[in-house]
Length: 204
View 1 (cartoon, helix red, strand yellow):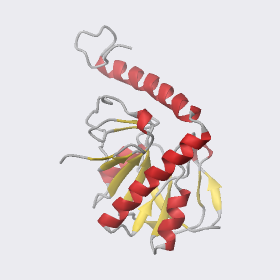
View 2 (cartoon, rainbow, N blue to C red; view 1 turned 120 degrees about the vertical axis):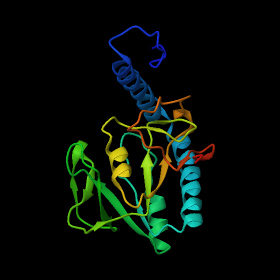
View 3 (tube, rainbow, N blue to C red; view 1 turned 120 degrees about the horizontal axis):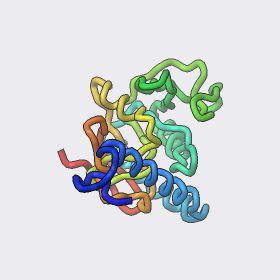
View 4 (cartoon, helix red, strand yellow; view 1 turned 135 degrees about the vertical axis):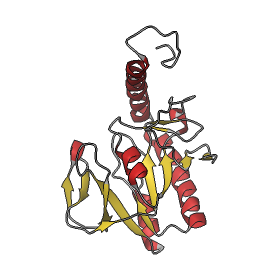
């Protein structure tokens, strides 16, 4: 597809073209992400998790919001267990409702889980926490730390509404990099993006 933000692009309008472009890129990147061989995925994930742990340590993270891995995302549970062993507190997100910020609930090994949106589990009975750091999965990303997600906008709304704003760390594979996601006013950049190839810190 042509550049969706090109003023000369023919179509029904820039917003519609951007939506179509993102849908196409999302589909391409999800297909790519799920195609990685297991050995490559495991090696890359280890590098990513080590990078995230270094950020935890440098920022003094105490309560981290993670995610339940889905559709080929970075497998974060080795980091969660490491973080817990070092005295941290872990939380997982719950979708409260459409167009609502996410809520994070305490996760501990063996706690009861129930299926939420898209069948993704979340803690059923744990208390709500306010993480100081969020580890956020990426479908795609760019060098300005903007993130392409699944299109629901949950993390953008969560970060926009949070006060104080948590440190945000986007995690994904280097092959998911885009030249730009064409960020709009509702897109909230990550503070860091961590891949197996590099750690990018957002310029303020």
